[in-house]
Image (cartoon, rainbow, N blue to C red):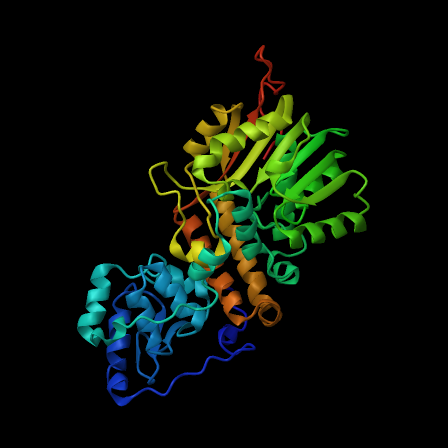
Length: 445
């Protein structure tokens, strides 16, 4: 996270108590620090301390990893890769003093988790007692998923429950993290020194310009979140906008916002599934951050549905996180799937483009905003850091730690091109081939 109040990771609201460690385990603590320090870069400004006070690394290091309990090693060794790291951090058995993002960036293999060779090294040095299985934190969803996310993957009912699990946390928590725009998608920075709010405004404006919106047009925004795109298009482009979200909390917040801004006569946000929209003849459709929840198998049906909602010459702007290639697994890793976005899937942009052009659209423009998402996440991390105590009161310490880890690791993934963010613009051409598009893009940057 940011640089504010680094020690508040463990003292806010729910203090984590360091256990009394038996003598045989205390004797191994020096080995804990020495072993874990092997996985730091030689020049990493990170020190490691263990539960008995032993340490490794530079004493004047600005960043520190604290192994606060033997449970940290059990989590790291018994769970696959990133899942063990998440369990250790979320429970407080493993902690960070200083900037979490900087620690992740400096620690070799931390984001991906310990590989088999690293685990064997720890076992050899510290003994097999750390292989014991520990129950996962209650914030993790494996058993809860089986109980509450029953039904076919990406069915309407299961999608609704998955979205509620992520978004129906606390609107106030999201206000603290996202800022006044309440936009939970990649911003677009018009200049290096632009603020988050300026960048979110610019993102919505860019989408409106790519869609060619003009007064009196009709816009459908699927997966509309807290209604940022709907409000922007209605207020600044004079359109009649309909937004749809599966989150009841988002819909209620957005409806109140539209009323306060005097936009509810030409803009609405519905609580429901985009597949239940029956209207046709929209001039434009925006999909900002929904495709990640659709599923690769469902992309053809998804784009056919959106094409069917549009008039001839209508445009679709699809904005989503993607894989850097089309060869990688669509499924997200276990940390994201169990703690953050249940059932999320990411495809390569080539897969997105193919699905669009095979199901009713002519693709006219595409761009990658990967670096912009890294900047967006840095701003969200700084917001969470600055409002840490209130965020913990709203969502609880462990859930706040989930978001801290998820956003810092995601920032690093965008920077290292593990994931990307693409906007793809398509048009529904007439049978004659007429697309009603400008000869050259006229929307600027």
